[in-house]
Amino acid sequence: MSVGELAGLLVAVFWAVLVTLLAVVLIRLSKVLREATVLVSAVTEQAVPLLQDANAAVRSAHEQLERVDEITANVQDAAADAKALSSTVAATVGGPLVKLAAFSYGVRRAVNRQQAGPVVPQQSGEREELARLIRAEVRAATAPRGGLLARVRRAVRG
Image 1 (tube, rainbow, N blue to C red):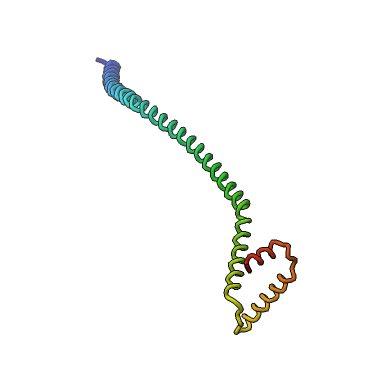
Image 2: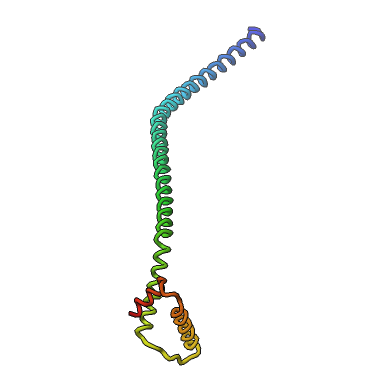
């Protein structure tokens, strides 16, 4: 055997060992790829129904939000209508009611003073009040007799 033949034999053995190692690596790699394929298919089988359920949940939530938006708009409309109604009622009934309450207070006060009789004031504040009342009586006595206020005074006095 010559040196060239020995070198060729060593190269052939080296290539045989290298090819064997590469074959083992490729076999293991193919097993890993098969397992990865099985794993991906299993994940896909489980993920698709989960994604469908999530999609259905999102659609349902979207529908519910649309309903809530409609309800909120209706509540806002009802609140605006109630506010308009209350302001209309207050403007329509409130003014005359305030006037009627002031008028009835004045009539009650006049009747109470009429029934109480004359009061002699003891302090200066009371004297000023008495002077104001006397001026009001003088004005009332000299006022025209046909007005509503005069009729009320006559009715209160009897």
